[in-house]
Structures are given as structure tokens and as C-alpha cells.
Image (tube, rainbow, N blue to C red; front, side, top):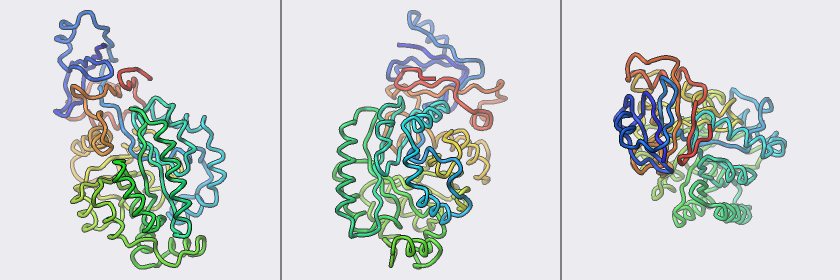
Length: 403
């Protein structure tokens, strides 16, 4: 057992001052520092630096490690032009994405306090890395395929990757399922994969209505994305109808990604069925997409970095700052608390994990942040954390320190 003491501890009841956490792999007790020291005089005590805040370990629900080698190869500013550049450079990006490069990406996430992440894997090249890193990983095996003629081979490869993931499965490596998007997975294949996820009780995620051009193609069979899919892949019609695609997930809670161009009625459908949304503000901006109006969304929301194919870092504080600036509606303090929750308690609930909250019985995952000076009040700590933090000063996973 160990005791961790800081000026502030972030809990579901707010920021506790001068408090301490008793833990091993799990959180055993939270109390004021003086009481804890007197009660457990023989336990090793770790003191955080002055003005430090203990947060639950941060959770990045959506990241593509497979594109971690990208720096300058891809084109930004327009979703379809970006997608074209991904297709054109895909082989090179994948071949250049070594275990070392992906491990560096994971290390950078760890330094920013990310103790859990959801990895979207389209071909399994990242599985060894995800198994070996210290973080908890929800490993989403992704299915892509708009042409029904290839369904048998695609599904067979998917099952092979699922079986491989199951051979790695433990309490920090969790196999899961991903469908790429309604424009890239044909309806027959999508149904089969969703049914597999339901029968296997696996978490599932899917990109949804990320761009205006996606909506134009799915809804009206026109637009630049449709023209690209016709020219490059011989598409004659959209792979899905929007509402029918969303309805495929009615019986399994799904983590949809982006949903920037979902209508009010579609967002209501997501909420009624218990779904959630990953919001990736920097990715949306770089690909020419609108602002996700989180103030009008009832679904649980996580803030996620997406991959380095549409971002310049996997640092969660970079993403939080972008969200703080982009989401310019409402009270700053309330928004900041909301954003902190989006990478802690909300994200843990979305991924069905025993972390994300500092409470007895939860996994001892901590991200400790040092503020530059004493905050004027507890109400300011969330936005001061977002504004002034580059990396966490200490990071624990299951009670073991890694940073």
C-alpha cells in the first residue's frame, strides 16, 4: 500500500483540498491528509509538488496508431481531399509505421496523463505495441468494405484478428469491434459484424457523419465524396441509408465518432438508444468540418485526439485546449468541468471500465498535474489545468508509477 498526498484531489463531488489517497492496485480510501498520515503511520507516503492536482487517469477513447508515421504526407482543409491523400499514401504510411514509432506515440500519450486509450486497428499491425504498453487498451478491430463481393474475405480476416486479439486478452488489453463508417461498410457486412459484437458482448464503435460530403453522398447520392468513391472504387450507390445504419446499433450501446453532421432527430436517436459520441475538435477543424454543437447534445461525450493522420499530437491537453476554444458557448467554468469529465468519468463509463473516478474500489489510475501557482478558488482549477498543462508530472496505472 502507498499514500499519495496533494493540495487537490478531483472527485465526483468536486476538488478536495489537502487530501490523500490510500491505494495498491485499487483505491482503498480517500481522506484528509492529516487523518491518513496518523491512521497509516507505517505506509510509504508520496508527496506531490505544491499546487498539484490528482486526477483519475485520462482516457482517450479514439486513436489510430497505424498512421503515427505521418507528418507531412497528407492534405488538410477538406475532408474528401484528405481522404484521397490517405488512400494515395496508405501503403507508405503503414509500412513506415514501425513498432518504435507507435510506441513513441503511446509514450507521448502517457506523458500527457493518458492511462487508457481506444485503438482503432484496421489491419492489426499495432496489436503487439498495444499489448506491450503500460496503458489499458481497448483494441477495436475495424472492418472496412463497401463492395459486397468481398464480404466473405473481409469477415474472415476480421474473425482472424478477433481471435488474435483474444489470445492477448487480459485485464489491460480488451478486444473490441469497429465499423469504419456508413459510407465504407456495406449494409450486409455491417449487420453481420454488429450481430457478432452483440453475441460476443464486445464494445463497438463507428465513425458517423464526420463531413458534409459524407452526408450529401448518403442522403442524396451526390457531392465530392460520392464522385471520389465512384471514380476510385466503382461505387454505384451509397453503402447505407443513414437512419437504417444507425438502427443497426439499436440493441448495442455504441461509441459513435464525430457525428458533426448528424441532425437533431438523429442525435435524439443516438441518445434514446444509449449511445455516446467521441468529439475530436482538432481533427474536425483540420478536415474542414463544422463545430460539433455539444451544448445541444444529450449523449455522453468523450474528447479524443483521433490519429496522427488528422492531428499533430496525441497530447490530451492540446485537445482539451482546442475544445475549450472551439466550444465557445456558455460558462467557462462549467465547460471546463465538462471537458475534464469527458476524459475521465464519461470516458470510463463509455468504455465500461473500472476507472475514471477517484473512489474506493476503482483502479488506481492517476494523472497528477502541477499548476504554476495556487489557484484563486477551486472553481477555477479545471480551466487552469487545461490552460497551463503540457504534460502530467506523475502518472500511475494500477498503482504503479510510470511517469
